[in-house]
Length: 136
Image (cartoon, rainbow, N blue to C red; front, side):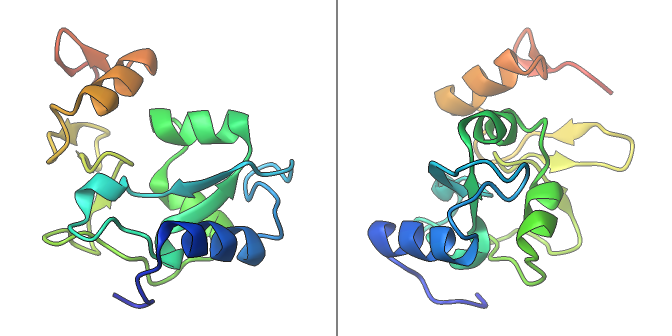
């Protein structure tokens, strides 16, 4: 990891301080210290500054749905050396929930594919149909 593991309050404070308490996407007041990659993917909770972004409610929802990509959020935060969960490759693209995104737009099932929260939000986004990825 490129930066130290923080506890939850220090993570939130550091993310908001870095981003001036503004949404890194639209500039509105931020209310969420968003985990760019879901914290459940990390054995230690993923509370790394390079895995955080200040987001407003609307942009936070888009990031959770993965309609706002991990790469877009990292670029807005100017994160060049992101924290990655064990087994993840810096050369691959992933959605917030750890599903690998391929160059043709298809996704491979990641470690949280069966997580109820991940499935719910991906279904809301129209990405899951009948329990599998609905695009290709």
